[in-house]
Image (cartoon, rainbow, N blue to C red):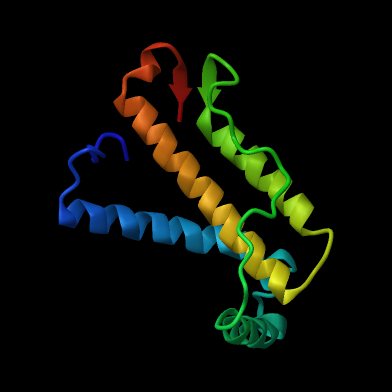
Length: 144
């Protein structure tokens, strides 16, 4: 993202590309915190159950009062160490969020965790890219 985007001078086209890429990431993040994906309802015997659940979830989402700050796992701090292992700290964060999510099951929890996880990772991506653009990477070692 850093190589492609100058966040201070984004054209309309580049904003669209960035938005689309973040949207794809958000979609997959939301999958991590929905019951059908957690329970792996993806094979022939449970795929219909998966589709029905997501259809019901979509209906509920239309009137849901979203809560965006419900994850208690500490947000990612990229400056905790001098060498920043981006892939492993993101994976560890997502794994910890999934553990927290798994404690209780509900449609509302799926929606709220999906929103919170997406917002937190999007914020992490953008803040990391901005820091790399500011040449803070000279002080730290970023490993992708």
